Amino acid sequence: MSSRKPIGDAELERLQYRSFSYFLHETNPDNGLVIDKTAPDWPASIAATGFALAAYPVAVERGFMPRAAAVERTLTTLRFFWNSPQGPEPDATGYQGFYYHFLDMRSGRRTWQCELSTIDSAFLLAGALTTGVYFDADTADEHEIRTLADQLYRRADFQWAQNRGATLRHGWKPESGFLKYRWAGYDEAMLLYILGLGSPAHPLPESCYTAWISTYRWEHAYGYEYLYAGPLFTHQLSHLWIDFRGIQDAFMRVKGIDYFENSRRATYVQQQYAMDNPLKFVGYGRYCWGITASDGPGFETIKLNGIERQFFGYLGRGVPYGPDDGTIAPWAVVTSLPFAPEIVLPTIDYFINRVKLTELNPYGFKATFNPTYRVESSSPCGWVSPWHYGLNQGPIVLMIENYRTGLLWQLTRDCPYVASGLHRAGFGGGWL
View 1 (cartoon, rainbow, N blue to C red):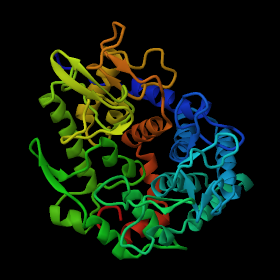
View 2: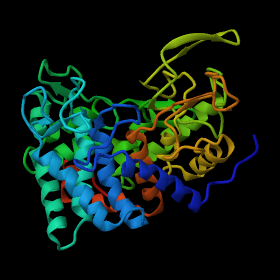
View 3: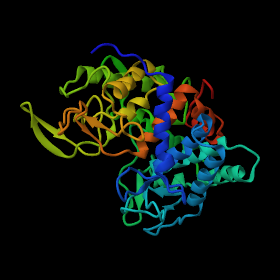
View 4: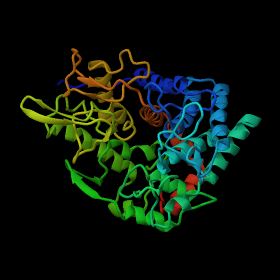
């Protein structure tokens, strides 16, 4: 494969706009809820709604949306969450200041008997706090945005979510109580812990963060030493908001790097794994990588060219230990843009201009594709997910912006709660 040119600014902005347009068109204007994926009768995701809140400031700055429209959409969303039913009832919207993972698009109430999700609530609250910093005008509406963002964050009882343990629980259900899993091992929960430590009303003890980092795994793969997490998104989502360049906690001080550098290494491990291609999947290579939690062809086993291949549906795929079934997620590559633009930009160019992954798609990239899983078409992509997901579109919008202007990082730096959470987690140096 010949070397590829990096993608240009105009194409990046087009991709950013098309990804943002998911939030323009897949949101209920009456309550601000964003649909989880573009399937019929699908519920809203509170994480996708949090990404939308964080994306509205980007849209204003980029001219994708007038400020007045962004203010209106933001206010509608924050008012909905503040006023929706909070309580132990099984059909509420949330409890203890946290929210159910999936909500009915129209009523805004819990659906699918899902869990009250601590991590998805963190994404929602981070989005709210972003709007509280950005919308700083001396108007009644923008003042209300700031007030509601603050109140929503203060209401979340992070101490309750500890459930008398050292670390935080994944979630809770009214039918059965807390889920058995706690947040352990390095992953996207970094944001959750920082927000919990910074809370002015229900702050986590500092021992909670210490307990969490004690579960980390330092690994060596493809010539890189790094803090391991398999799926690529786990190295990205906290970084949507927090600029980890130059700041270190106790763990990273010992290692002599920061979490930003760690994500850069994890990005290179992904590319190196694809080039090595130990399981011999079709298409993997220098410009075709990106393995993460994502949609897939479905749970089945098929014999292809004498090899029995096991395929999966929605699953937390990871590198280098798997699971891996040949499914590539372009959005996860784009979201690595700030960490390693020198390998990400040519890969985006390959996805757009060589395998034509954005053609005929209103929202840019479809979620995933799998060239090993052949379908009845001439497409070099093989199987392509029929859906778009809010969880993919938000990080594309936010990380393209962080790469270009650092907007989200700057807004979060100006949020005193996040700075407080970082200080209490033991971070120092750099911009702190």
